[in-house]
Length: 157
Image 1 (tube, rainbow, N blue to C red):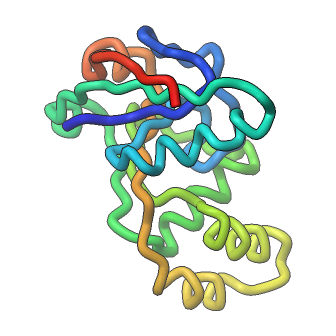
Image 2 (cartoon, rainbow, N blue to C red; image 1 turned 90 degrees about the vertical axis):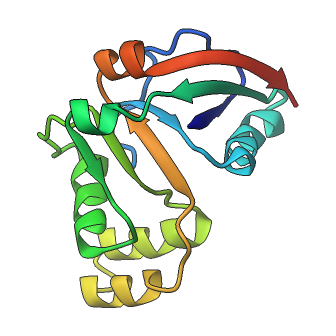
């Protein structure tokens, strides 16, 4: 499978040193099989006057059988709970890879309303039910990156 990462840098050797904590699936290197999603991730850098660069990787899907992987097929109660634990710094899981929907603008707004206790979980899930997930794959361990993600090149947008 081909995966993409949108940034302002070409990233031939991904590492976890530069990753941020308290994001959707916790500290990790985020990729997507959706090229347009990676391009969208570049937009925030381009708005700041930086380059937008999409790096391309070949992903060895044996990782799903050989590593600890958590896969969310939809926006669900489990997905919402996991996002909440990661964004609040309360995730203590040991997953190597987490796969699931991106909290895009509309989804992010619903998630924020839930996190701020302005809507309850049932209402958040009702709103998310009709959203089509934009898939992200988060590599949370260096082993997962080094052994299963192989750089193929990049392009400047």
